[in-house]
Length: 71
Image (cartoon, rainbow, N blue to C red):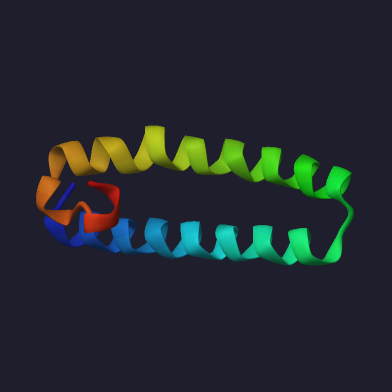
């Protein structure tokens, strides 16, 4: 993968992670605890897949792109 593509993917993954976190805050503030826990578990699966299957391999190949908050 080119550095340009890797940078674009990295930026998208970081943005998507922030949006998923924001969705968690929304559900936590508007729904009951059971619904929040169910939703949190689903979001956790998505974020784990993003990290393990997309971001970690990307940052192994392009370590200079790894954001400081993930170091």
